[in-house]
Amino acid sequence: MTTVVLIVCLILSFLLGGVPFGLIVGKVMANEDIRTEGSGNIGTTNALRVLGPLAGALTLLFDCLKGIIAVCLSRAALLWALGSGGEGLLAPGGGHDLYLALVAFAAVAGHMYSPYLGFKGGKGIAVGFGVCIAWVWPVGLSLWVPFLIGVVLTRYVSVGSIAAAASLPIWVLVYYPQATTGFVGVFVLLAVLVIWAHRSNIVKLAHHKESKLSFSKKK
Image (cartoon, rainbow, N blue to C red):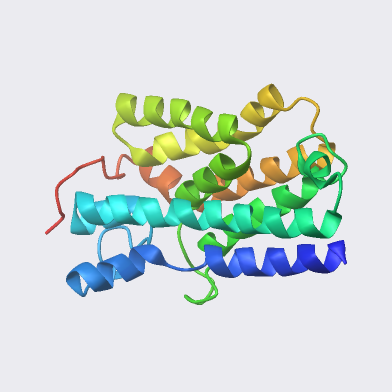
């Protein structure tokens, strides 16, 4: 029963993570497809760049909520399936801490490879923050430290995002040294996946062609 519930949670988390809120916000607010402007991405930074602060804030909020809802609903379902003692089993270091780590991975992967957009999507930062806040909140809050340092020092959101992603496994080990190898391994894979999604940004940074943070619309 638990395995079936986990599989359902993974599928639903992937589908929820894939909802392209950046695209939806652009269509509703300005009848624009933000994929045709700026970086062509559906995430917060491009929504901010193309449509301004309100669209950027809404995209950030909704993408974070995807991760939060995916983890919270999956956690409730898994606690029901595991029965008595489920709380301890799902906690980092518990016998089944891998379960929610996989749910978190599924939600972020859904955003990055949206089934609604031909398996193309965003870069996973906002959703990743959401899944961490919903479950391992000290890690989620700590991710803001390298992110803000990177953005403030360089004015490149991509630098902050890459720094935050790279720090993810470190924060996990700092706060949850008792976690299982599988748990930590999933977060390492998640960090690698997010950094890989920023490979075009890394190339632009190397050639000094990356766009700096701006709170004004492109148009």
